[in-house]
Image (cartoon, rainbow, N blue to C red; front, side, top):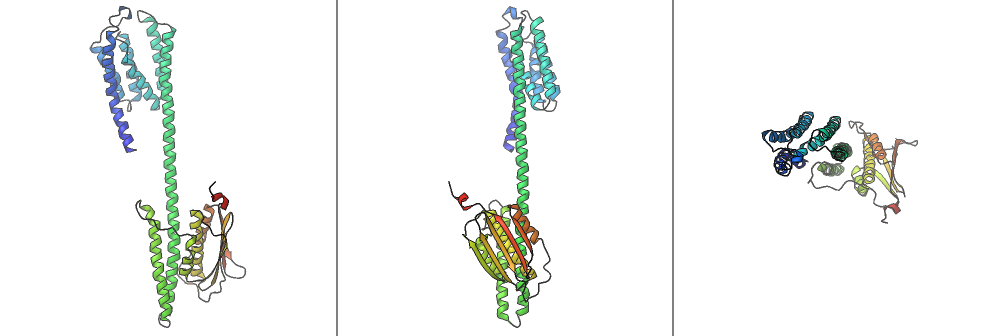
Length: 384
């Protein structure tokens, strides 16, 4: 983008100089073939002619700041040049460029009115003010030239407008995606921290309770704390690494790591897998893992010691996740862990993928979390 802007600025500076050279040298060459022909009535260039030839390029140099002024000055200089009977030729470059520029810069009405006035001037000039009056063929050629210039300018302006709008939409989409990525990252961090910090809290409480009477059991709790703290640091690095382009990426937590998750939770979990286990889309893979993680975190917070049933069902069109606890844990809920945004966050994850999630108490006691996440059918994943 910066290089394109630099080249555009350079072109804006070079254009007036190029037009000045083309008009002065070109008109000087054109007069050799016209002054000698008496019926054309052309006269050699003098200081007035050169000055008028330079008005257009000077106006082009300031056309971005004074577009209407540049347009009027260029056309007026061209008309005076012709009325003084100087040679035809490159003098028409400046009017064409300034009309084109006026259209592109958004001064369309002024450009079309100026083009119409220029056409009327040429008709009057070629009919009554030159030795050999011209007919409708000449007038039609002038009209065609002006219409071509203005039409091409309109087409270029419309195309540039579409490109600018496309870039604006792309930039807006990029900002929206960045915002969604930040929200997704925040949710990932919430899930990682909530689960592991809750686990550390519970195991630390257990270790403190057992350290005097059952030091071996306290050692196990401390080992769990060590592993949980290591895991939370690893997952945090994996999530935050997306902020750095060259950062190594850690494997994203997914359904293949449920065994590790269950083992670290410290809960008595009975895992059942139904259906044919297969690779699932990354979004579903991550969401399923996080739903199980958040469910186990909630059980750790509010019903430690309960028996947990975890069922993962791989259907043809959906992945079903069911987490139930019996609420019969002998231990009391650990205080000081707060409420959080766990269940709404799980619902948002499921809804974002087109699935659903329900959570609530069981009639027979305990709590149930049930989620369904859509999957492509196995046949859809096979190459055709």
